[in-house]
Image 1 (cartoon, rainbow, N blue to C red):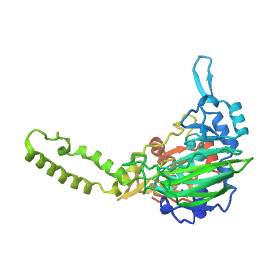
Image 2 (image 1 turned 180 degrees about the horizontal axis):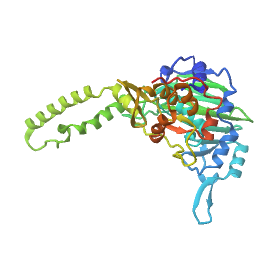
Image 3 (image 1 turned 90 degrees about the horizontal axis):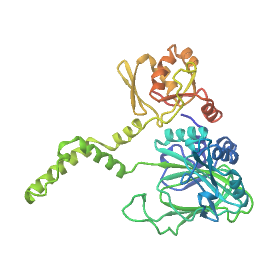
Image 4 (image 1 turned 180 degrees about the vertical axis):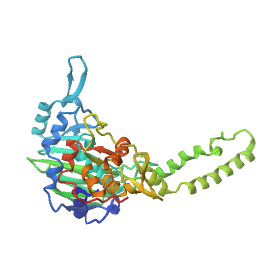
Length: 407
């Protein structure tokens, strides 16, 4: 999948691929800052806030660096049947923005199709799970205190300006659940300065950082933080441990009553089984299966009730894995395996590209009934019908006429 955001991030950071993620701090600027307004504007963010039922911790508001009680910016909207739904008090939120505050909305990709498609493109690029959090700060509001994240982040300054300080890590690759706390900030300042519209910054996991507008005065800042949750050796080892249930020796009770010799024999047997288990489930297989088995995201599925689909989009979280098995083609994605005849190859090339695809056009260019091939992909959630919202999310951001996921 080709996406302008991915290419812009690479060029801004001087990368040619995602191998720089988590390696070291990087910063740069987009060649075309106009991309920012295509991704998001403050007004569109507030429109999302207005039209959703939101509550902490996903939706939060800060004033003078302190998190406000939800009553300060939320209200209960009561339906005529007496159901209370938490919604943003837009008048109160407007007053807070006017005086100076920070509005935080996590996982905007769950609500906004443009962010959904952008995160999917970044997932296909990085082969990691990606979530985008949004920060709107007005006037001279302070930001969060010095902290570190347990994942790598790429920050895109969408509008306005914000001052940042980034420090190195004080503990190598710290984790959310770790062997010891990581509470002492590093004294090593890697970079401090102002992020402006179109600027991009990569902060690796464990690097301390803080952002503020306390020194900016009037104005505002809107930035996106794309979080990349990379897998670690701990994740792989946990997965391997889960596989131990498949083998009988691990399911037996530990022997505590038959003496030290019996205990030692059992331990020797378990250690031998652990060696075989680790050898049988290598890291590469874990990473591959993690992509194949991830369940499909929620999408509109009309199942032909309003007429047959005409345009589809591959919505798997990761690039589908396509294997040629003699005269058959196996597609693995979204936790499913779908088998096609070899003639379907040219059509699959387009249907699984991550680009919007017109089924009539695919049929005309490949000589294969694209609707018939798309049917099981739609049924299993690998592809989705292109709604108006998804179409808008792709327009101007995903180039047409190129297919980068080759079966």
